[in-house]
Length: 247
Image (cartoon, rainbow, N blue to C red):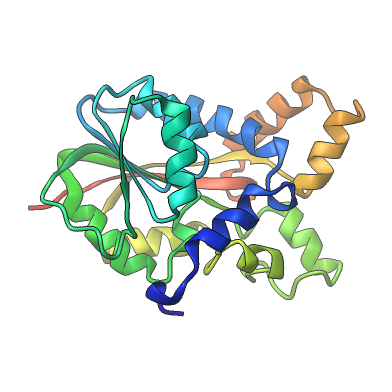
């Protein structure tokens, strides 16, 4: 699929609905912030893809100089309203963005799986990293137990399949550690840390329902996070922290 032909505004509308927006996402974001915090460099930050600005708000609390690039105008508007002037927004695709600026920290959170050409965009991102800068990339994990169970149930064909619901919301790829690390290596980035967030045997909607019904508790969620640190390849999401800016 050609990125120029995509309707990012339609994809944003689908993604913003309850159909594909879960309380579990907020829980995962909390643990992402906890995992990233010790590795954050000082300086200028760039967020690529902001959705409604939840992660943007967290980043703005840590970076006075924050630039955000997002392709869907409605998401730019929503995030800008949420941030109240604490970030600079650019409405553009990553493939067409032209900038000579470099950044000390770049964040690609739940976005790589939406790209038509992950390797090509990651190569561009590498050029936007300042010397000594770090890229934080997080994606849903194709090897999550919930997906593996869905395969055994016949609900999806294989672990790395892009489901109908995912494709409707703009997903083009599904990653596991091997494919995510391959993309980083191909563009000359070096992973200095890798990890997973929340051991996950339930689908997002099941996780939400179990929380609401009191079947699982905050202590259970914390246990899933702790277990995920032991078995990152079986987590809901996986991440890499990479170095290797232009030069």
